[in-house]
Length: 155
View 1 (cartoon, rainbow, N blue to C red):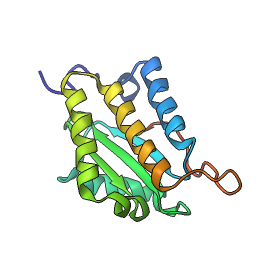
View 2 (tube, rainbow, N blue to C red):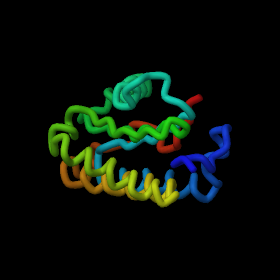
View 3 (spheres, rainbow, N blue to C red):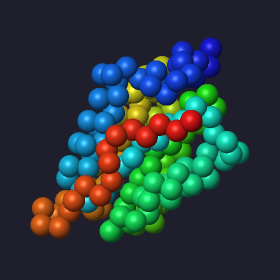
């Protein structure tokens, strides 16, 4: 049995309504006390070899590089190819370095192996949110939600 083998082919079938809400609520909570932005992008297959390259392409196509403080983070998942990547803009990536991002992905993958996909995504988003709160705290006078909070489903 593959890591994601129980998922159906249509994106809307990847998560139950409750799981979808769980992930969106995690994104909203993660962004509540930071100027940072978190997005989750899910597609069936990665058309490229390297998932980080694909995540980068999506990051820029979603205009996540246009946040004021360069502190957007994209969680990318290719369900059928069993690939994940975290792609962070330069402002937040440089604040902690590569090891932090690798550990966040590894922790999420550990939950995926136990078939806790939505929980793994939620916990990863929470972890990213905590980091963003530490490095880019919320300023009520200037901060705004620059990007949508919904999960983006690709092909």
